[in-house]
Amino acid sequence: MEFFHKVTKYPFMHTRKVWYGVSGVAIIASIVLLFVHGLNLGIDFTGGVVLEFAYPKAANIERTRNALAEAGFHEAQVQNFGDERTVAVRLLPTEGQDVNQVSKSVTDALKKIDPEVELRRAEVVGPQVGEELTNQGGLAILFTFVLIGIYTWFRFQWKMGVSAVIATLHDPLLILGFFAVSDIPFDLAVLAAILAVIGYSLNDTVVVFDRVRENFQSMRRASPEEIMDASINQTLSRTIITSGATLLVVVVLLIEGGETLRGFSWALTIGILVGTYSSIYVAGALALDMKLSAADLIEQKKDTSEIDALP
Image 1 (cartoon, one colour):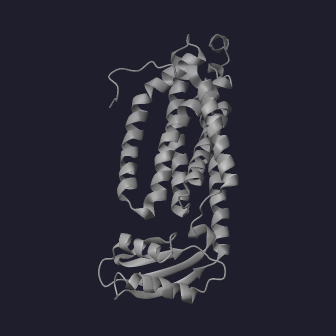
Image 2: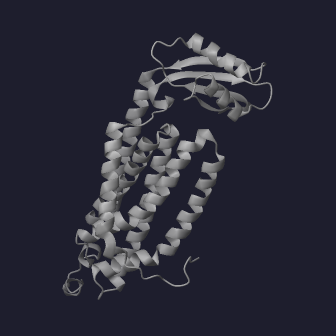
Image 3: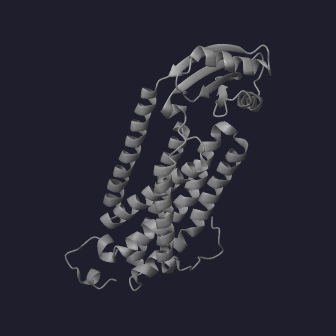
């Protein structure tokens, strides 16, 4: 299945230095935002109070969220828990708070919309749990990058491995910058989305690199820049169809998924767009500027005269 009727011939690599500048500015801005503003960490990472309520019939999540906001709990996370009648309310920690007083205040607020609502459970999530999750999440991302580097190095060549890791690192940095500037709560669902984006971006990069390796063998008179452009154009239909179909589903989730899935949906939306871009203008461009050549990708034979003649 092809998106275009014929293979395009757009010179992607001709403007790569411009896009280096765009990526550089975006990465610097993201890092500055992370240090200056920081992330709006959710209860998964900060700890807080978790309350479980049971409604006599299906709970209206939006009405519950609005009632809590009117009572002063603007950062409350509300979602169904187990079934449509049970609701979990998560509140960020407040210094010196009394869990019993918080439970009473929240219960009073919810009884205004349904007098029969019942508090089933109230517990405090300690900050040490959030610290442990932060450390484990950081290690998960670190090991992901290490394994990506090893995989691409052995499957292709070290220049491609390095460029793939840099491109994959580029994507979560921009997502984190978006969350820093938008102040959307950053929770475990968002972290899971970032890990998914890393895999999605790597898959796009591997598809392009596979075609690059094939073209270095078939387009022996072409320059490395021409081969990189041809490879990207040959995989462009596949990239647009895959990214477009995935993005369509994620945008629907963003619109209809509600407050609970808002951070997850935004992370995937930004990640798909940035991941598609980085596979071309970061991974491909960096490999080209690291002087990738046919000799790097074609197995050496006893008679190397043919390979030496390749660009």
